[in-house]
Image (cartoon, rainbow, N blue to C red):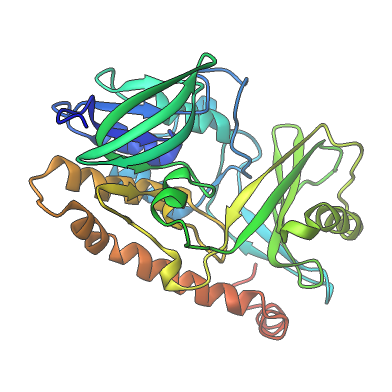
Length: 352
C-alpha cells in the first residue's frame, strides 16, 4: 500500500456539481477530475435535459458570483408554463421565472471555470474505485488505455448512475426512471412550455420545451415502458397544437426519483457524494442543478477547512438540502394524485 497518495482529492464527473467543487477547492490541494465530456464542442457525452434553470438555481449561481453568458441562452425565454392534465383535459398556465439555456453549453461553461491547478482528464471513463488503506485507487480509461491513480478522498459527482454511490453503498436502492427526450423541428405556430401529467402513462411527469427552432418533448417513465410512454404522450399532446414529424434526435438517461429521506446519501469513509449522485434531485420537478451547486459549495467548505470528521460534518451541513428535498417528495405525492391535482387546477389558484 502506498503511504503517499498521488492526489488529495479525485472528483468523478464535471457536471454542475463536480465543476463547482473543482472551482471552489483550495489551490493548496492536489486535485484530479475525470469527465466523460470533451473539453469543448458538441461531440462526446451530453446530458439529456430540458435546459430550464429554476429560480433556486439562479439564486445559487448569483450567490457564487456567476453571471450566465449570453451565448448559453436560447429562445424563447420563459414567461409561463402550461400545466396539462391529459386524463381530465384540464390545462392551466402559471407564471414561472425559468431561464431557457443550452444545457450542454451551460455544462461546458461551468467546466471552463475550473482553474488550471486542477488536473482535468477530458473524455475519460472511470471503471473502478477501490478502497485502500489510507485512500482510494481510481481506475479509468483515457485514450483507450487503462490507467490508475490514488487519492486520499474521492468525490462522486457522476449523476444518477453514480459509480461512487454503487461502490460505497452496494445495497442501497433509489427508485429510478428513464428520462427520454425527442427533438423535432419546431413547426408550431405558438410554441409553449408545458408540464404534462398522465397517471395512466407515468406517475412522474412529462414536458415540452421550445428551444431555438426546435421542440423538445420528453418525460420520465418506468424502465419497462419508457418507449411506449413517450409515444403515448406525443400522441395525446397532438390535440394541443403541437406538430410532430420524425424526431431529429433522441436522448435518454437514468434519472433518480427519491421517495424517502434515506434516499439521500452523503457518503462515508472519505468518499463523498454531491448533486444527483447523492440523490439530491427534486421529486416534484426533477430539478437538480440548484442542489448540485449547493452541495458542491457545502463540501468545498468542508474539504478546504480543518475538519477532522469530514463525512460527518458534510452530512450535518447538508441537512437543509435533505429537508428541502423531503418537502419536494411530499409535494410530488400531491401533484401526482389525480384527485388533488384536479382540485388545484379547477380552483385556478395562482394560475394566469
